[in-house]
Length: 411
Ligand code: ADP
Ligand code: MG
Image (cartoon, rainbow, N blue to C red):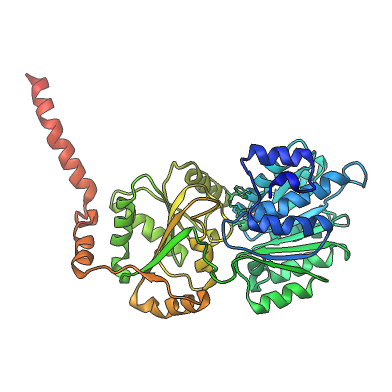
């Protein structure tokens, strides 16, 4: 099956070619035709399998074919959990929609809303948004949703969960009744599935590889490491993988800052991303990691969902996630598309219960990485942190090297 065979416009086909997408992934192959037909869809497929294009391609096609034939207005709304994801998905839409005249914009909170409102003057066809900011602008009358034909909830199970459901329901209330609704995620539980079905009429369910929620491209394992020793093992992973992009997940914002400081003491540069950071800061950090300027990113679960960064070779669960499905999403930041990825989780004695929960969610055990006692002790021994005052040490070395030069000058 090739993209050529889909009933989509030549412009979209050309864009797919330019993106280097040769053939549809399984989820794209199965989702695109029913979405083009106007069906409601609940689609579950592993991380990194191209779910974004699975809804973007048919939506752009639907909107493009209507251009000039129906009144202007927002035709599709894509709701996502984070600012970073809104920007990323908007980029995918814009790449796929080149030369089609279809315009996609993103909305998210934490920044001035005036420039966002101004966008609407240029005409917006597709809106990619976090629920909060969308609700605010809608309440203020800046957004009109009476022409919306398609609603997408990406990371659907998360969007329908406690933190978001109220905002989502408020938005849904204001959408036209006869719209098409699409849910996409890598994970979903029965409760959320029921809720999803209650929001639509006759959703078609498309599920791919339901047996193992972790993508087959990811080689993932767990190592038993005590809390106080974790930083030494992280140092080791980093040093054994020079030049590789490593994404490190921690349980809290405070821990993110602590880990980055510990790494600094070891002479390793890293950055952090979490919800206490200013939006502009978050975007800057993502850009630095995306470009490879910074190779180590310490993140909380806000970055677990949806983020697609090329060449993330390694995911480290410095702490185990306290929500089981986040294990799947965190490790899913590597091994995307055709790429292979590695993931390791550090599990301390206190976290063993959580590990059990995760394994029961996965319905299989996670491979254990056995660390010999000697090896464990050596990892701590060889750490650069042993020279606690690392900077002073470097200074001393530098001074020693400079001394002979100075003497020479005096002569
Ligand atoms: P998901 O939402 O399923 O986690 P994404 O939509 O973020 O995955 O896509 C993961 C990666 O796969 C992206 O980098 C994307 O460019 C790439 N990709 C998507 N579809 C294709 C395709 N048909 N051929 C090649 N690469 C693809
Ligand atoms: Mg996605």
